[in-house]
Image (cartoon, rainbow, N blue to C red; front, side):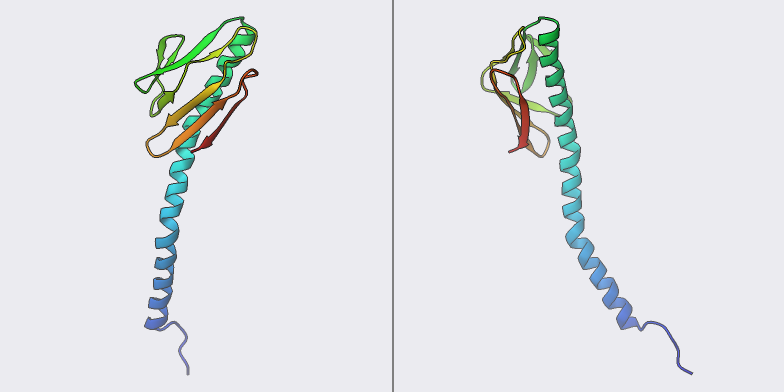
Length: 130
């Protein structure tokens, strides 16, 4: 009668291969997850900018976006955005008629840096990881 089952060597080799796969893929997966979570925060900020642009056009208001010491200023009032720091070279204005002065906003999260570009004159907003 022959016994069926795995030998100790086969089990050890299988476990070694699985550990090797996890040791390579787990850090990559964690980094991708961290990027995903932080890009969601930047997505929320881009949605806020879009709403600001829409508000300028619909309600005939001019909005100025600036930065001081990494803190965002909207119409010269501090806008707290948790977990994000900003860098804006020159103030960006959304005019009453729906156009924009255009400019670039650099957004720093805890681990990544994103570049948001607002084009002049139409105020198109796009962003990318830089």
